Length: 208
Ligand SMILES: [Ca+2]
Figure 1: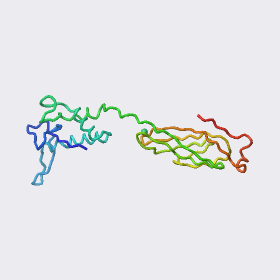
Figure 2: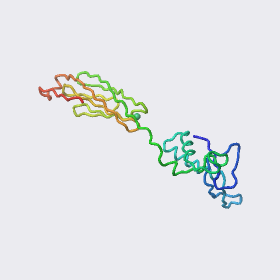
Figure 3: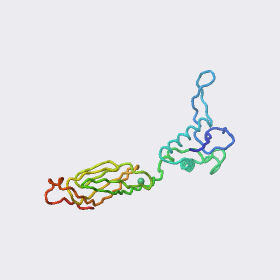
């Protein structure tokens, strides 16, 4: 994700390796094991870094990229020491509350462009999904065939009983939950043997 070095913000000594600190975190004394199998307390960069890493992980889980996490942690830190960035405290002490609150709203998810083609033969129609999504993938399909029939298949087939013109609607759902809709008029010619129950008036549905 990113390389991060944290210095303790309440300690007189700041460990220096080859790099100066990016951020500071509270130098909470943490329990540790000592060599004589007893507990001890230690403070220092080793105890400050997990706090900074924890905030980084939290921001990462909220959807920020690695670069955005680092920028967010640095821009919301409480400045310490010399004004602005300095070697000892970096950008300052991490401020978890400020970092995770008032995050800029994520960009809206454009809905998918729903589209489909169809091919009918003797009342049997095959529908081919042509939907696309500009920022993701289409993961769900909900079809209504205009005669009461429905399907959730991506590329369904449907057998019409009565000839006529039907408004077929596809509702495509993307991986962010946005929905796009397409409606097409589908003309269906059904063999006479199938139409006995249809009467003389062919059903017609209006397209919208
Ligand atoms: Ca989308």
